[in-house]
Image 1 (cartoon, rainbow over the protein chains, first blue to last red):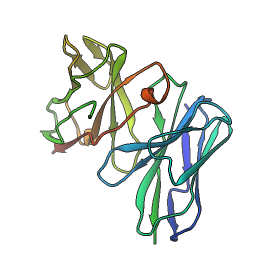
Image 2 (cartoon, each protein chain N blue to C red):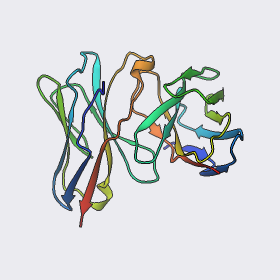
Image 3 (tube, rainbow over the protein chains, first blue to last red):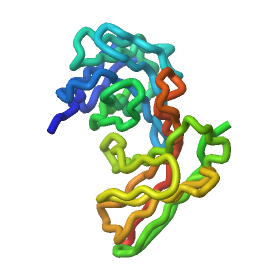
Length: 113
Length: 113
Protein backbone atom coordinates (compact mmCIF):
# COMPACT_ATOMS: atom_id res chain seq x y z
CA UNK A 1 0.00 0.00 0.00
CA UNK A 2 0.95 3.60 -0.51
CA UNK A 3 1.42 6.43 1.87
CA UNK A 4 1.09 10.19 1.87
CA UNK A 5 3.56 12.01 4.11
CA UNK A 6 3.41 15.58 5.28
CA UNK A 7 6.36 17.42 6.76
CA UNK A 8 6.79 18.92 9.21
CA UNK A 9 4.09 17.61 11.53
CA UNK A 10 4.30 20.77 13.64
CA UNK A 11 5.42 24.21 12.54
CA UNK A 12 5.86 27.29 14.68
CA UNK A 13 6.48 30.47 12.76
CA UNK A 14 6.77 34.17 13.39
CA UNK A 15 4.56 36.90 12.07
CA UNK A 16 5.52 37.88 8.53
CA UNK A 17 7.62 34.78 7.97
CA UNK A 18 7.42 32.73 4.78
CA UNK A 19 6.70 29.11 5.68
CA UNK A 20 6.80 26.04 3.44
CA UNK A 21 4.90 22.82 3.98
CA UNK A 22 5.71 19.66 2.03
CA UNK A 23 3.68 16.67 0.92
CA UNK A 24 4.86 13.44 -0.71
CA UNK A 25 2.79 10.52 -2.04
CA UNK A 26 3.84 7.19 -3.52
CA UNK A 27 0.47 6.14 -4.94
CA UNK A 28 1.45 7.52 -8.35
CA UNK A 29 -1.69 9.68 -8.13
CA UNK A 30 -2.07 12.43 -10.70
CA UNK A 31 -4.02 14.95 -8.62
CA UNK A 32 -2.97 16.51 -5.33
CA UNK A 33 -4.70 18.99 -3.02
CA UNK A 34 -3.99 21.33 -0.12
CA UNK A 35 -6.74 22.07 2.40
CA UNK A 36 -6.80 24.25 5.49
CA UNK A 37 -8.79 23.25 8.58
CA UNK A 38 -9.42 25.63 11.45
CA UNK A 39 -10.30 24.23 14.85
CA UNK A 40 -13.75 22.64 14.90
CA UNK A 41 -14.41 23.58 11.28
CA UNK A 42 -14.58 21.89 7.92
CA UNK A 43 -11.85 21.89 5.28
CA UNK A 44 -11.28 24.66 2.77
CA UNK A 45 -9.45 24.07 -0.50
CA UNK A 46 -6.38 26.24 -1.00
CA UNK A 47 -4.72 24.86 -4.14
CA UNK A 48 -4.85 21.73 -6.22
CA UNK A 49 -2.73 20.30 -9.01
CA UNK A 50 -3.92 18.04 -11.81
CA UNK A 51 -0.46 16.87 -12.78
CA UNK A 52 3.21 17.77 -12.52
CA UNK A 53 3.80 21.52 -12.97
CA UNK A 54 0.07 22.28 -12.93
CA UNK A 55 -1.47 24.61 -10.32
CA UNK A 56 -5.13 25.51 -9.81
CA UNK A 57 -6.49 27.94 -7.22
CA UNK A 58 -9.06 26.84 -4.72
CA UNK A 59 -11.41 28.95 -2.61
CA UNK A 60 -8.70 30.14 -0.21
CA UNK A 61 -5.61 30.70 -2.36
CA UNK A 62 -4.91 34.30 -1.32
CA UNK A 63 -1.85 34.42 0.94
CA UNK A 64 -0.51 31.11 -0.35
CA UNK A 65 1.70 29.81 -3.15
CA UNK A 66 2.07 26.22 -4.28
CA UNK A 67 4.54 24.18 -6.29
CA UNK A 68 4.27 20.79 -8.05
CA UNK A 69 7.71 20.14 -9.47
CA UNK A 70 7.34 16.37 -9.36
CA UNK A 71 4.32 14.12 -9.68
CA UNK A 72 4.95 12.72 -6.22
CA UNK A 73 5.30 16.00 -4.33
CA UNK A 74 3.23 19.10 -3.73
CA UNK A 75 4.46 22.02 -1.62
CA UNK A 76 2.50 24.85 -0.06
CA UNK A 77 3.99 28.19 1.01
CA UNK A 78 2.39 30.59 3.43
CA UNK A 79 3.70 33.82 1.95
CA UNK A 80 3.41 35.93 5.13
CA UNK A 81 2.31 34.24 8.34
CA UNK A 82 -0.34 36.09 10.32
CA UNK A 83 0.14 36.61 14.06
CA UNK A 84 -1.86 34.19 16.26
CA UNK A 85 -2.79 32.11 13.23
CA UNK A 86 -3.45 28.49 14.16
CA UNK A 87 -4.63 25.86 11.69
CA UNK A 88 -4.04 22.38 10.33
CA UNK A 89 -2.99 22.04 6.70
CA UNK A 90 -4.02 18.78 5.06
CA UNK A 91 -2.62 17.38 1.85
CA UNK A 92 -4.52 14.81 -0.22
CA UNK A 93 -4.14 12.95 -3.49
CA UNK A 94 -6.45 11.11 -5.87
CA UNK A 95 -6.04 9.04 -9.01
CA UNK A 96 -7.46 11.71 -11.25
CA UNK A 97 -9.41 14.92 -11.39
CA UNK A 98 -12.81 13.26 -11.52
CA UNK A 99 -12.06 10.75 -8.79
CA UNK A 100 -13.38 11.75 -5.39
CA UNK A 101 -11.79 8.95 -3.38
CA UNK A 102 -9.08 11.07 -1.77
CA UNK A 103 -6.27 9.86 0.45
CA UNK A 104 -5.25 12.40 3.07
CA UNK A 105 -2.07 12.93 5.01
CA UNK A 106 -2.07 13.44 8.78
CA UNK A 107 -1.59 17.17 8.49
CA UNK A 108 0.82 19.92 9.46
CA UNK A 109 -0.19 21.91 12.53
CA UNK A 110 0.78 25.56 12.23
CA UNK A 111 1.06 28.08 15.04
CA UNK A 112 2.21 31.63 14.42
CA UNK A 113 3.54 33.58 17.37
CA UNK B 1 -26.25 28.01 -0.01
CA UNK B 2 -24.87 24.84 1.62
CA UNK B 3 -25.05 21.76 -0.55
CA UNK B 4 -25.63 19.44 2.40
CA UNK B 5 -27.15 19.64 5.87
CA UNK B 6 -26.18 17.24 8.66
CA UNK B 7 -26.94 17.17 12.38
CA UNK B 8 -24.00 18.71 14.27
CA UNK B 9 -23.67 15.83 16.72
CA UNK B 10 -24.92 12.39 17.71
CA UNK B 11 -24.28 9.93 20.53
CA UNK B 12 -24.46 6.16 20.61
CA UNK B 13 -23.47 3.32 22.93
CA UNK B 14 -20.92 0.76 21.88
CA UNK B 15 -22.54 -2.06 19.96
CA UNK B 16 -25.42 0.06 18.72
CA UNK B 17 -26.13 0.91 15.11
CA UNK B 18 -25.63 4.58 14.25
CA UNK B 19 -27.47 6.29 11.42
CA UNK B 20 -26.17 9.67 10.27
CA UNK B 21 -28.50 11.58 8.00
CA UNK B 22 -27.66 14.09 5.32
CA UNK B 23 -30.03 16.35 3.41
CA UNK B 24 -29.07 17.45 -0.11
CA UNK B 25 -32.26 18.93 -1.50
CA UNK B 26 -30.61 20.57 -4.52
CA UNK B 27 -28.57 17.61 -5.67
CA UNK B 28 -28.02 17.60 -9.44
CA UNK B 29 -28.33 14.57 -11.67
CA UNK B 30 -24.57 14.64 -12.28
CA UNK B 31 -23.73 14.60 -8.59
CA UNK B 32 -22.71 11.68 -6.37
CA UNK B 33 -22.78 11.37 -2.60
CA UNK B 34 -19.60 10.70 -0.67
CA UNK B 35 -19.02 10.05 3.02
CA UNK B 36 -15.75 10.60 4.82
CA UNK B 37 -14.80 10.46 8.48
CA UNK B 38 -12.09 12.20 10.43
CA UNK B 39 -10.67 11.07 13.75
CA UNK B 40 -8.63 13.51 15.84
CA UNK B 41 -5.16 14.32 14.54
CA UNK B 42 -5.75 12.59 11.21
CA UNK B 43 -6.95 13.64 7.80
CA UNK B 44 -10.40 12.57 6.58
CA UNK B 45 -10.77 8.99 5.38
CA UNK B 46 -13.08 7.86 2.57
CA UNK B 47 -15.88 5.56 3.74
CA UNK B 48 -18.39 5.04 0.96
CA UNK B 49 -19.94 6.64 -2.11
CA UNK B 50 -23.23 6.22 -3.95
CA UNK B 51 -25.54 7.61 -6.58
CA UNK B 52 -28.90 6.01 -5.80
CA UNK B 53 -30.59 3.19 -3.88
CA UNK B 54 -28.39 1.23 -1.50
CA UNK B 55 -24.64 0.69 -1.29
CA UNK B 56 -22.79 -1.47 1.20
CA UNK B 57 -19.15 -2.18 1.90
CA UNK B 58 -17.17 -3.71 4.74
CA UNK B 59 -17.30 -0.51 6.80
CA UNK B 60 -20.76 0.96 6.32
CA UNK B 61 -23.93 1.05 4.29
CA UNK B 62 -25.48 3.99 2.51
CA UNK B 63 -29.17 4.40 1.82
CA UNK B 64 -30.24 7.07 -0.67
CA UNK B 65 -33.88 8.11 -0.92
CA UNK B 66 -35.73 7.62 -4.20
CA UNK B 67 -35.65 11.36 -4.96
CA UNK B 68 -31.95 11.47 -3.90
CA UNK B 69 -32.59 14.40 -1.55
CA UNK B 70 -31.68 12.46 1.57
CA UNK B 71 -29.00 9.92 2.37
CA UNK B 72 -28.28 7.97 5.52
CA UNK B 73 -24.95 6.48 6.49
CA UNK B 74 -25.36 3.44 8.69
CA UNK B 75 -22.59 2.11 10.92
CA UNK B 76 -23.42 -1.27 12.45
CA UNK B 77 -22.18 -2.18 15.93
CA UNK B 78 -20.14 0.95 16.60
CA UNK B 79 -17.04 0.80 18.74
CA UNK B 80 -14.97 3.53 20.36
CA UNK B 81 -12.85 3.61 17.20
CA UNK B 82 -15.87 4.89 15.25
CA UNK B 83 -15.94 8.12 17.25
CA UNK B 84 -15.20 10.75 14.62
CA UNK B 85 -16.57 13.62 12.58
CA UNK B 86 -18.56 12.27 9.63
CA UNK B 87 -18.77 14.37 6.48
CA UNK B 88 -21.40 14.04 3.78
CA UNK B 89 -20.29 15.54 0.48
CA UNK B 90 -22.12 15.98 -2.79
CA UNK B 91 -20.09 16.61 -5.91
CA UNK B 92 -20.04 15.85 -9.59
CA UNK B 93 -17.43 13.76 -11.36
CA UNK B 94 -16.94 15.96 -14.38
CA UNK B 95 -13.78 17.60 -13.11
CA UNK B 96 -13.09 21.28 -12.62
CA UNK B 97 -13.35 23.21 -9.38
CA UNK B 98 -16.99 22.25 -9.01
CA UNK B 99 -15.94 18.63 -8.76
CA UNK B 100 -13.65 19.20 -5.83
CA UNK B 101 -14.62 17.90 -2.43
CA UNK B 102 -16.03 20.58 -0.13
CA UNK B 103 -16.05 19.58 3.52
CA UNK B 104 -18.62 21.26 5.76
CA UNK B 105 -18.59 20.93 9.55
CA UNK B 106 -19.89 17.37 9.53
CA UNK B 107 -21.52 15.36 12.31
CA UNK B 108 -19.56 14.65 15.47
CA UNK B 109 -20.37 11.07 16.50
CA UNK B 110 -19.58 10.28 20.13
CA UNK B 111 -19.48 6.65 21.22
CA UNK B 112 -20.18 5.88 24.86
CA UNK B 113 -18.70 2.77 26.43
